[in-house]
Amino acid sequence: MTTAKKRFSLTERDPERSLEFEFIRATEHAALNCVHWIGRGDKEGADAAACDAINGTFDHIDMRGEVVIGEGQKDEAPGIFLGDRLGTWAPGSPKFNIALDPIDGTTNISKGLPNSISVMAAVIAPEQGPAMLNIPTFYSEKLAYGPQVADAMRRDKSLAFNLDTPVEEIVEKTARILGKNVHQVVAVVLDRPRHERIIKGIRKMGAALRLISDGDVTAAIAPSLPDSSVDLYLGIGGSPEGVLTAAALRALGGDQQLRMWVRDDDERARIASDPATKNLKKIFHADDLVMGSSAIFCATGITSSWLLPGVKLVGRKATTHSILMRARSRTVRYIQAVHDLDHKTIYLRSKTRETLI
Ligand code: VTB
Image 1: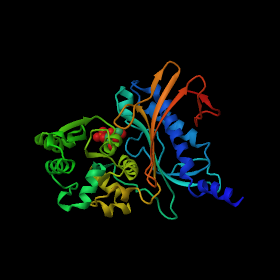
Image 2 (image 1 turned 90 degrees about the vertical axis):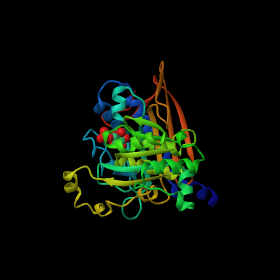
Image 3 (image 1 turned 180 degrees about the horizontal axis):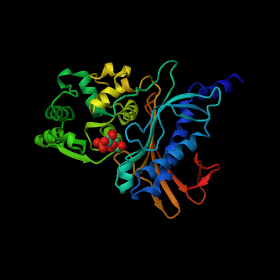
Image 4 (image 1 turned 135 degrees about the vertical axis):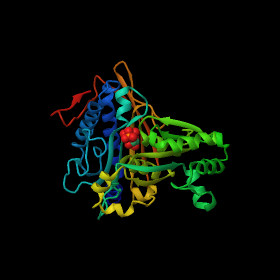
């Protein structure tokens, strides 16, 4: 009797273990619900469909989820925002802090381009304060690299680099750490005029540059994936995306340096009263952004990326590819699911009953 009770209490003591699979359902449903928006030139339509599915899925899950990092800050698009509640909020149900981006890469979806995912991170809510840092600036400078580089920098200070290091030196040190020639180092950068200096530096060194149009969560995780062939991610991108990336890196073992980047005087004035602005110059690492030992990261591919293949529709079957990881155990699960669209129903918040996709 006592033994049986103990066995069941594992899930009670560690609600991540069972709820993590509900998170995957939410991103799967978001991906499935926005698949018909691919290529239709309507970012908002796709985003609204993804949010509807995420909200609808959580409306049936007993948990108390508070969104501590949402979207909308940057795009002013439809979204799930800071302070929103996910789950039934049944009394006594597990309490989580949640960061999410129903779609990272809405422009890519609207154009039918690769590299879009539905992504979220969750951390068991601490007694005090959020478990994930809500960065008040729209953008941050980012520099992400894999576990081998992170470990080498910790061991040998002469190999270390940071956001202030000239890009040429970053590339050269990365090559040295990885035992590669400089021209074999692969660096990913968002294709934006603000990155002219970084792009020039990478090209000058003869390293391999991969410019992307949007979606830097997958790009910043890529160096920590064993088979991505990407070594570095550099540049200025969305701050919430940086925190989502940090949750993944806590489970994969790589790292990301992040520093707030103020766009203009209007933004400086807008955030002036935010206590976080005392850290404007600080370089954060993954474990400063996502704190504590409990962190779940999950994502489902919508269109294909370094991280995940996109949704594949063949006849009445849809195949989704997702990744689910926990920082505590460092387990990385790849979950491929085949959905029979004649039978598959999902909950949408906009509808009162389960609907076919
Ligand atoms: C960044 C990046 C995102 O949009 O925020 C980018 O982090 C926006 O950059 O992953 P611009 O404002 O310069 O267009 C994404 O690529 C997609 O939301």
